[in-house]
Amino acid sequence: IVITADATSAVATISPSATACSAEHSAPPNAESFVGRLLGDDDDAIRALCAGCAQEDSTQSAREQLAASLELEGPADPSLNIGTDEAAKVVAHFCMHHGADTRTSRTMIDVLLLLQPAPAPCDLWLCLAALV
Image (cartoon, rainbow, N blue to C red):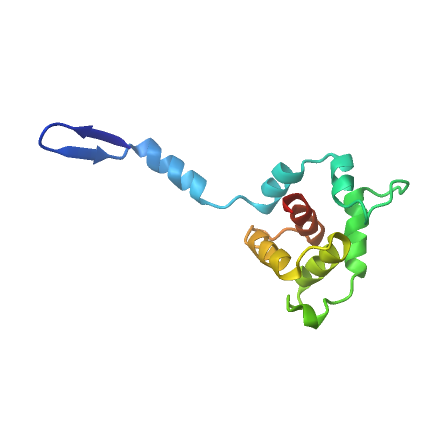
């Protein structure tokens, strides 16, 4: 944005490059790039995030162990008031391991679900762990 002014008037103009930049940054990041930037690909760092869920002596990566653990997770307890979908299972599992508030965690997961395509359950869990 370029603003010019003199004693009697002011004029603002928007350069074409400014609008291109704005449009470029208005689209939400895709899930893969967001998760990649937030977590990276260092298995030790990911293992640290899910310390209670991953065994160090396993042949599986921490992410694979977490994904397997989430697959075994039953439906979320209805008394938690966090829903019954896959995201609710992620929240229930996360809160069981970290003692976090279920409804606050569900709100954070709902925001992460706005990423397209939606992150995998283990990535939702890891993002929640990184953000909390």
